[in-house]
Amino acid sequence: MNQPYKPQGYSSVSVYMMADGAQRVINFLIEAFDAQQLRRYDNPDGSIMHAEVKIDDTVVMIADGGEGYPAFPIWLHVYVPDVDATYRRALAAGGVSVQEPVQKDDPDRRAGVKDPAGNTWWIATQVG
Image (cartoon, rainbow, N blue to C red):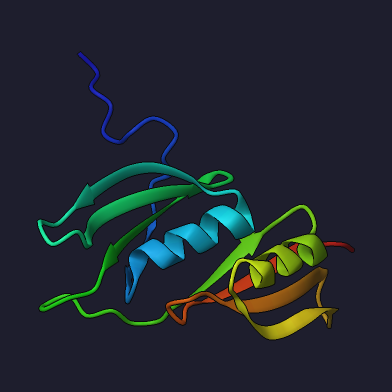
């Protein structure tokens, strides 16, 4: 019998975020990137022990930081169909601009936004 070794629709590698305010980050991801929450397990105090959201074809795992598992900001890169529209949505969702959309020396038009926990999301659309 051939047992699946991972959940259907998951890639082999997923980012795992330890956040200060994981629920705020999840809300941001839903508003900015149309993320879909897949799973969630709470601690007895209501903090998030483990949650998973899917952005396009990628699962992002997230939990509230705490004793032994401190929160720390990370950088992530995500390709989107329209960097300008996504950048505006991210700002409307509470993100803070790091870089307005611009094309430099590569084929990507790219912007940067910090989420409510201080993680930086580099948003890009390949344009040429």
